[in-house]
Structure formats: C-alpha cells, structure tokens
Amino acid sequence: MEATATVWPTKVDLFGVQVSLTDYSDMREAVLSAAEDGETGVVSCHAVHAIITASGDPDLRRQVNTFRAITPDGQPVRWALNSLHRAGLNERVYGPDLMLHLCEEAAQRGVSIYLYGGSPDVVETLQANLREEFPTLKIPGFESPPYRELSADEDEEMVRRINDSGAKIVFIGLGCPKQDRFAYEHRDEIQAIQVCVGAAFDFHAGKKSIAPAWMQKSGLEWLFRLASEPRRLWRRYLYTNSIFIAKFACALTGNVLSRLISFRKSKSVQQDSLR
Image 1 (cartoon, rainbow, N blue to C red):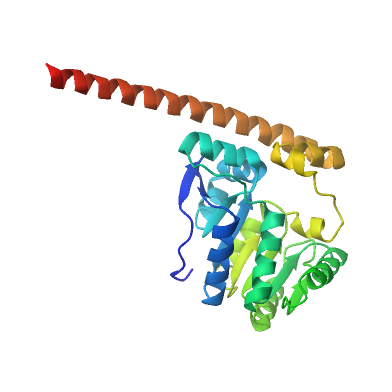
Image 2: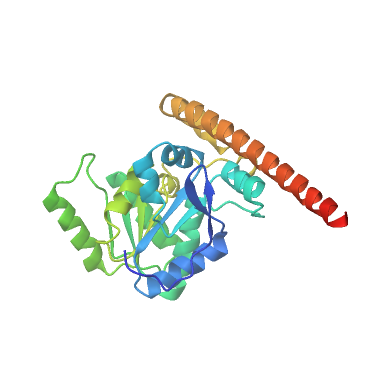
C-alpha cells in the first residue's frame, strides 16, 4: 500500500480493532481527496458484527487494522467509543448512508466509481438507481462476482477491468468479513480507494428494507434486520451482540478502575506535597 498524503481520521482501540473517530463530513473529504490524488487504500464500515468478528480472528484483525479508516457503522459502536475514549461522536457513520454521501460528492467533483458485489440483478438495479439519483455520477463499470472463489486468471481479469475503468472509488458489497478480506488482498492491485459498505447494495437496489430512522437512532437496527431475516441472522446477533456487551462491560469496568487508581495516586501526591 502506497504512502498517503491524505489526513485520515484518528484511530482508537476497540477490543483490538482500530476504529476511526470520524463523521460523514470527515470521511467524505478524506475519501474524495485521496481518490482525486490517485491514492489507494481501504475504508470499511464496522457495526457490532464486524467488530466482534475481527476482534476474535487474529488474522482478520491484523488485516483490517491496516485500513485507512474503519468507521463506527453501528450506534453501539459509537456509544462504546464515546464511553471508553470520550470521543464525543454525535453520529455513527453508516455504510449505506456513507455510500450516498460519497456518490453525491463524487458526482459534484467528477470522480468516477465502480460497483463490485451483489447478485447480477442487485448490482444492475443499484447502478441504475444511483444514476437516477445522481445524474452526473460517472459509473464506468459494475459487476457481480460468482458465488465461489475466483481463479487466478479470473482475479487478474477482474483487477484489470477495475483499473482500466479509471474509477477512483470502488464500492465493495460482499458482506462481512468477505469484503474486508477481498479489499485487503487487493489493496496493492486495485488502483483506487476501496470502500466496503456491506448491505448497502441490497438497500439501495431496493431488495431489502432499511430500518426506520427511530430504530437506527436507538441502536435497534439489528432487531429490524433480525425480524426481516430471522433464520439467517438469529445466530449472528445472539452471538456477536452478547460478546460485544460482555467486552464492553469489561472494558468499561477497567476504565473506571484505572481512573479511580489514577485519582487516588493524584490525591496521594498532592497530600505528600503539602507535608
């Protein structure tokens, strides 16, 4: 991965994963500036599931921690950053919304995008919807990969297609953790900023419903998605949500104890100085 001149948001540790203290405005400017300068790199949007998956997998954690930015995609992730690091974040940076922010800015600044992921009908509908919403947006290419590992020749051809398109931002919609592994493995080959946005392809193609705003703000989007796809998602949310809560409780307890010890040491030093 080449050196970057772009100033990316500061990262802090959350259960071993380096998460960025950022908002939509900062991410929009960082990604577009990097794209205009011809930089490469990866941005990924991590909700609870992605954080816990990376936290529990040393190899995946090593990979994602090399990314330019990992955004706090879920409200619980934002709350944890605010509680543990006093981040003061007023909003999460949700993959589907970030995608629209970036497409709007890319259309205004003449930066072209590429869409990689989803089923054939999803990515076809997605590109049509984006063109309708942002008439000046340049989309020189889009494709749906097969539901299997690419051969070496297929992989080489895929990279060539993306690079030959001239796109400076490549949106990856393969789901977690597949999209993160894909982006990491191609970080030096794909000559663009890769942005992993998960279910954004399905949402913006109208194939899946987005949770109501009040559920998103309350951190209940997971419940909406669970109700929509119970058979596919119940194990994921039972497992990752439980682990997230446990890890957060442990980290919060550690923070409180650390601050208490620090306070007592400070008081002791003050008392000694008065003697």
